[in-house]
Length: 305
Image 1 (spheres, rainbow, N blue to C red):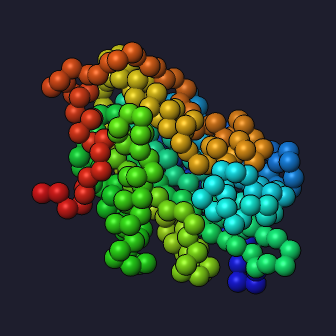
Image 2: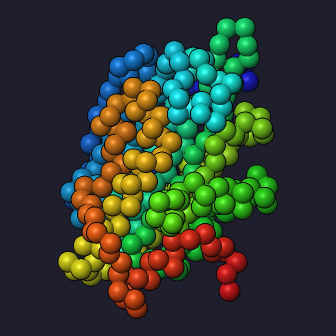
Image 3: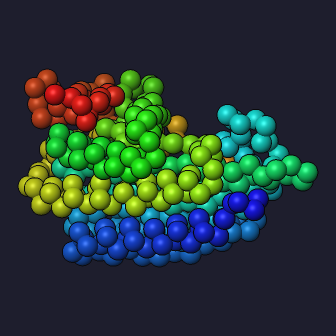
């Protein structure tokens, strides 16, 4: 494990959490992040959860740092890596979800994480994972293109093939199979990353983490003061229901956190404050709400037109 520097990863993640909270607060005139420190109940480690609520810009948001140490990897972590079953593990990560108040501002999600799995008599196995994705309600094409341009910029130093690969993985991962639609307009997703060596993989993690605010904050600033009414809020709540469905049915981080005995309040901070479901409803054809559905499929945003 000599080439693996867990302390450096942890230090970066704590700094990243601080930087993201500070940057988001610059767009919020009223609310501030409140910090909650906690200890892991099943072993060593703990976390630092920061939540913002009831703001003018951000209705609810959470930026969570966690460091979990356990004696046995849970099923969510070994389902696609059965050779790791029974290993001790450490997991550090920052995960965030931001739910703005204005329906014209998209919800955003980002996650960067590092795992080490060990057992006696064997070399440790480590990997990085993460990414970021955008979930608009009333999408603007220029915002989506900006989001993907910044995602590509995060990947460019690591090879021309990296952005298309992890963009495609994001489209495939954030897909609601039972609805036949993507959760939003995608971004980046990667997991089990270790084939570049520790230093280069860690540099990529930092690049993804550092590009989240440049990707998201300009969109927030452009859209947060647009006028809206009850119709837009109702549609936002309806589409937030899809967000809930994905996080509770498919999301690996949610499943891993609950199976590993993580702190439930921090794991479920990703859920919106208000969500609604309507039976067998679709927006009327030609309405501004119906425009969203053309965005809920994989598209090559940077090369269209």
